Length: 139
Image (cartoon, rainbow, N blue to C red; front, side, top):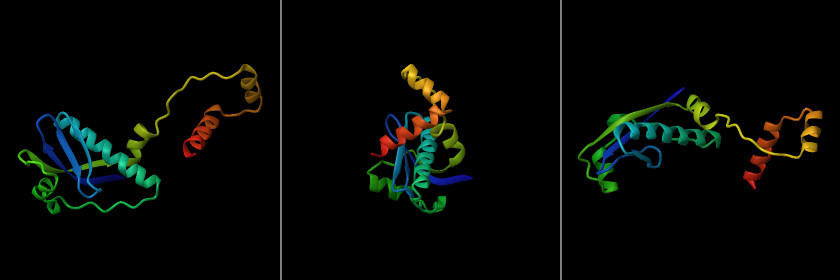
């Protein structure tokens, strides 16, 4: 499902800043306009993904016409010379599958006796490592 939120793009001296006013002023930036759009998609996907995983509600997106970029620039003390509002869209599930949940291959060493014992019991090494890491992270 495609998610779309308005974002304010502000040209600064050496980069573009991007602000999502509907999402607690979530922000990112990029050295070029193209990079700023890429970063905005990544930022939006990450925010929505984390909130979904934590079952935290997110506000509904405003329409483009409801965003007052001059007022936002004033609040942030930004000169809005080269600024605009644009919808940033992302399929969060697809983005997460390709970026956040993508498996990463790891090489590790264990004693030979432990390897043999685990193989005899048909233990899934990846699953055990993931479970152990999650347990360790939650401590």
